[in-house]
Length: 416
View 1 (cartoon, one colour):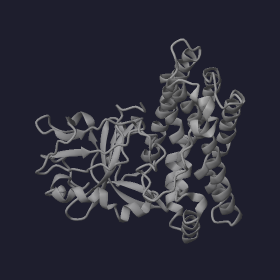
View 2 (cartoon, rainbow, N blue to C red):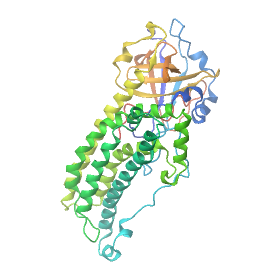
View 3 (tube, helix red, strand yellow):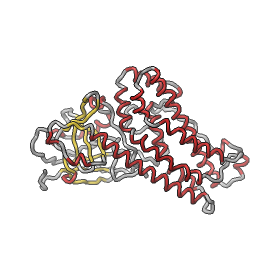
View 4 (cartoon, rainbow, N blue to C red):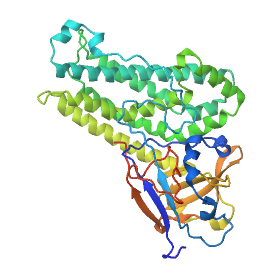
C-alpha cells in the first residue's frame, strides 16, 4: 500500500503506568466539543490538515511528520484508586467528600494494641482495611441500586432495558462481597484481632471471575449513560442526586466504576497483609497463593474486557465506500489506544490504533448513536515506524503532542 521509502511515523511516549479496564469514549456531545485538556496542547501543531488528506484522496500521502502520543496514565498502585477514571467527562469535583478513614488501632481496645509489636499492629491494620473496604463497597453498591436504579425505573426516567444495560450485573456482586465480609467478621476475635485470613481468601477469590461480564459491559454502559444524559429528565435527576448528601458528590458513573476499582486493588491489599506477616506464620503461604489467584483473575478479565472494547468500537465504524474496509480491522482483537485530534481548520478527528492498523475517523451521530466515520484509508501498523520517547521528552515542529487522550492504554501494559 505504501512504498518503503515513505514510512509513516508514530512516536509513542509511554509512562510507568497500569492498564485500566477499558474505557469508553464520551457521547455524541464529544463529537461537538472536545475538552480543553485535549485540545490545548495542539496549539503547537503547524498543520494537521496537510498531513492527513481527506478520504477522497486516492494515494496515501506521506505524513512527513510525527504523530506523538503524550499519555498521562494513573497508576492503579496509587492510594487514590477509587478516584473517578479519566474517561468520565463528568468527574466528581475536587471537593468530593470521602469517608473518614477508620484505623484498627483506634476502633478496638488500646490496651490490647499496646501488647502487640509494631509489625503485628500493621498487619492488623491491613486486615482491617480489607474488611472495612468490603463494608464500604457493599454500602455503595446498595446505594447505587436504591438511590439511582430503582427511582429511575419507578419514575420511568429510563426504561428497564436501558437500566439493565447501564447497571449490568451489579446486583449479583453484592452477595459475593457480603460473603467475604461475613467470613472476615467470623474469624475476628472479641479483642478485634485476626489471626488468619489466608485460607478464607484462597477459598473466596475464585468467585471474582464473575466480574468478567460486569467489566466487559462497562464500555457500552458508559456510552449509553452519556447518551441518556442528553435527556433533560435524566440530567436533572442525576444532578439532584449529585447535590444530595448521600452521593458524597460522586456521580452515578463513579458508583458504577467502584467494583472495577476494588477488583484491581485486591493485589495491593493482600501484598500489604503479606508484607507484615512473619515468615513463620502459616498465613504466609496462603496469602501468596491468594495473590497468585487474584492476579490471574484480573489478567483474564483484563484480556476479555479489552476484546470487548475492541469489538465495541469496530462495530461503530462507518465506511463511506467499500474500498475503505480493511481485513486488518476485522481481525484485530486489541485496541491499543484511541483519542481525539483537532487540526488548525477545526476538523476534529478520532484516531484508533488497533492491533494491526491505524484508523483515522470523524465522530458522527448515526441513528442516535455516536459512531466513527472513516476520514481516510486505514494505515497498516507495518507501515508505521514506532519511536518510544522517554518521559519528559518533547518533540516540536509538526509533531502532534496530545494526539491521544488520557483515556487510552497500551497493549503492552498490564494491571500490575
